[in-house]
Image (cartoon, rainbow, N blue to C red; front, top):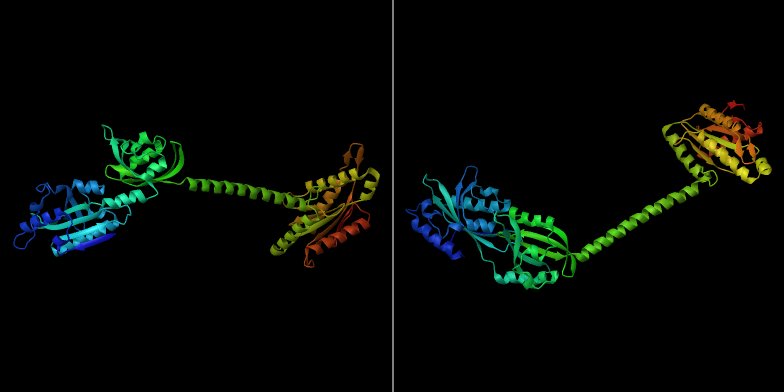
Amino acid sequence: MYREVHTDNIEGRAISPAVLDLLAIYRGTAANGDLPPLAALDPNRLEAFAGNLMVLMPETGGHYRYDYFGVAIAAAAGADMTGKRSTDLTSETSRLFQDSYNLALTQGRPILTLHKGNDPGALHLWEQLILPVRRVDGKVAFVVHSAPLAARPELLSSILHATDDGILSLAAVRDDDGRMVDALIETANVRASVLTNRPLSDLIGRRLLEAFPTLVDAHAWARHVAVVAERRTERFEIKYTDNDVSAWFRVTLSPLRDGFVLTFADITDLKNTVAELEARRASLAEEIVRRRELERRLNGLVRTDALTNLLNRQGFEDEMRRLVATARRYGTALSAIIVDADHFKSINDTHGHAIGDAALVHLAQLLRKGLRAEVDIVGRIGGEEFAVLLQHTDTGGAARVAERLRATLATTPLVFATGSLNMTASFGVATLDASDDSAASLIKRADEALYRAKRDGRNRVVCAEPMELAAA
């Protein structure tokens, strides 16, 4: 915030003629070196200055209460502070006033201040003359003259014509009940004419809702009313279509007296760019999803046996390495079963390869149905050879599962169009132990047990550990 505080040579520094007149009254009513009486500068007596006068009463706690607040100050500042405290203002302005009032109270003499807010849109420089006076009860009060100094017309003109934004200055139009029902366009810059494709003569002097029926929809108009009623700034984006113009505008509404300033900038290119980027992002997201799904399917094809839809050797070995690592980490049991269809070559030779393929699918389905879903793993690792992994299962449990699978296969014939086929299979069982230095060694021991089952007559379960279940 820009500020100046002067306690000396106030007459030489004052800008407003009213300050000099009030200083003359002030000094002329001071007697015997004391402060002038409040009555000498009472706004009710000084009608020519009353609109720009304030009367403040010091309170305990360092506060100052506004007992009188001139209407001209209220109109320029956008708020009537009568009955309120100086600390009710914004923090930076409040500190400026508090410091100035405290200085006047301490020194007991007039203070002249100049200040301007940090808001880039604040064109006015405020001049305040703080005059300490004596109340009837002997306490100190302040009569303050506060007025905005006129802004330089050439500065306003330069801003209006140099900016790339359209600018309209509007006054509220009210009905008989005081409700704001429209706004009159008082000023418009050239850029507003260009952006809306309207001559200035078609803007200045017209009502906003009449000039821009599509710009100010019901929702946007409520924002205009709120700006004037609540003295706050609103910003929003709106689609404007009129007079062969179709554009997106970013709109800013700022209160000004009993009305507002409407500033708007063309953001159509930005909106189109954002929309294009969003479309590309959506398309890219869809492409990523499509590619991930394709990758998932390809991975499934790479890991899946086309005939039986079980895991193929690669898929099974991947799962086996994972489950072996898990079992070792947590010390849980893990068993493997190798299954080989008995006399499968004779099935192909006797019934043909189509029935042979059907026999493999039949065996695969029985294996899958006989195992725990989402827990046990089954895959086809060779022509007629299958493998099973049983989590949290020791040798005895694995042998019982293998025997149940063997019995189910032996008693469930494969039925096809020209007949049926009874088939059997041999089972080798092994359980992960300390001697297995890899997943491959576990399968190797299960495969050796399978070899013994086939050597001993097939259609049986043999365990790599020293226990066997004879064929039923």
